[in-house]
Image (cartoon, rainbow, N blue to C red; front, side, top):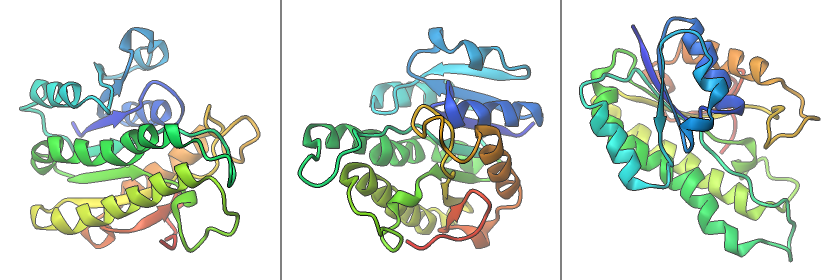
Length: 226
């Protein structure tokens, strides 16, 4: 049975990933800050195990890694993310910047370091980081959103670095832009339903291999510029 560990699995894209993989017969380790409130995650049919994990808490991350010490993980899916106040130049919420970086940039690297042995033991050997097109420097034609943009641009660099450092271990690392999705972060007016975004990404994930490592991909599999 293939196994995935998903952060931020209690809502939005993470929850839909959990549903999609469980439906395909995967064992799903769904991580979130408050498992006692994760009713939708716990209601998923299939082998879904809920774990308490604040991705910014090193002790909690290490605790889950120890708990799953003998569990191979085919796919480590770094999905947890936060959005700062939508502010333009002159209104940057500097007090939030460190918090956003901890979740969006630092946590995925922490997860990769803590769970690399689990991923090496898996058959698929995949690490997928959910990034954003807003982190693309080449595609930034709108300005603003300095906090969120910088956190995702930095995540893209983390993803590229991991793809190089983990290549000798046979691990494939990619960053995904999930599209503009109807979640708490994307809002109800977004272009894609979570089911559409996740179905497309799952289709791409199913065919990822070492030749794809280090790529920044749109949800439909097309490459995006850094």
